[in-house]
Length: 236
Image (cartoon, rainbow, N blue to C red; front, side, top):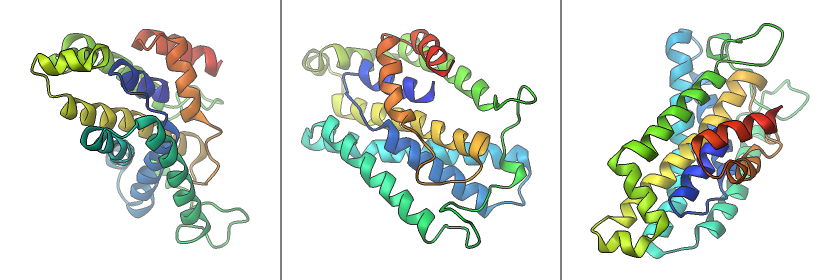
């Protein structure tokens, strides 16, 4: 659901971002760093802080191809695909080296503290509170796209960037905002997977959730409600 919203937001703005997988990994890194470095914080502070860090790390990773697109008109498909590999191998280096738990049999970090773990909604399952956050983001993303001036500009740029520019819209700024928000949404997928399900960062923790987001967004016609139904279908 997170990665589907990420891809759909970019597509609605006329940007073909294939970088949700890399942004997911960077979001997982951000959330893990906060959770491991501040284990004494109470859950009411540590969980939101970890989630915010995941959003920021993913957003910054999305901002790189956004800047290259806005400044140099670099093809975002190519740059986002390339950055997927950079993110993955950077995480791989960290979990095999500086962040690896020394006594671990496999290459992963220390387990995040209990205070950082998302509450389970249904006992005996892996359905955690990250799902509620994802549902909230469906509503917020829908409001952004349909009921704000920024959302109107993003849709206008996506429909016809030349006409939007002629109408006085700042297409470069909108590109930066879109790619940052899109990256942040994908980053949330990574951090919630770590603090909600796996509790350790490893270099193969995602089986391709970022790429699944592309199919989810397309099947959902790049609409928030469509992405919700599509992601539930894929998940089930």
